[in-house]
Amino acid sequence: MRMILGVLAASLAMGAARAEVVAVADNGFEVREVAEVKAPAAKVYEDLIQVGRWWDSSHSWSGDAKNLSIEARPGGCWCETLPNGGAAKHLEVIAADPGKSLRFAGGLGPLQFTGASGHLNWTLAEKDGVTTVTWTYAVGGYAKEGFRTWAPAVDGVLGAALKRFKSYAETGKPA
Figure 1 (cartoon, rainbow, N blue to C red):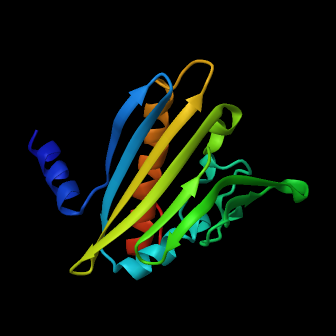
Figure 2 (tube, helix red, strand yellow):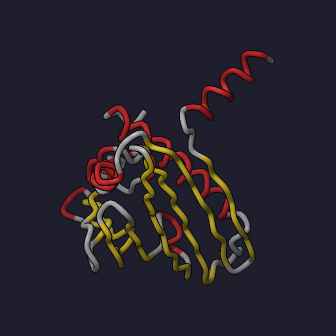
């Protein structure tokens, strides 16, 4: 028991990522991920847009996260190159404020096979050289089976992604 409490205390002290399903209904859901990154907001923003360096390859269409890129400008693409010259657009950038926020529209991953639409917001707030990174993803629309089972799965993927990002931003390694 002491060991478990010690690990928990160490995780909290290191600014471990926090994940939460904020709301869920048959027609949509919202998830929120928060992490404290020991780096200035300008560096955190630049690291975020280098998505191919920290995203998990198992959550890509090509199987290799190095094929992912983000063009951080309105109308820009969170895109992925695919074998044989193919490509996939995961999300579209709808707002970019370097060092402060990045906002996307669209459906991540298998949500593209539904009538869902979503908005993913990344916000950054720096204090004393530590940046609080908050991701919120609100999804609504139509999915044949509803969205109640989608929320925990999406929360898990985004929570794991933010943990990888935090590690990458602080150490240069996503794992």
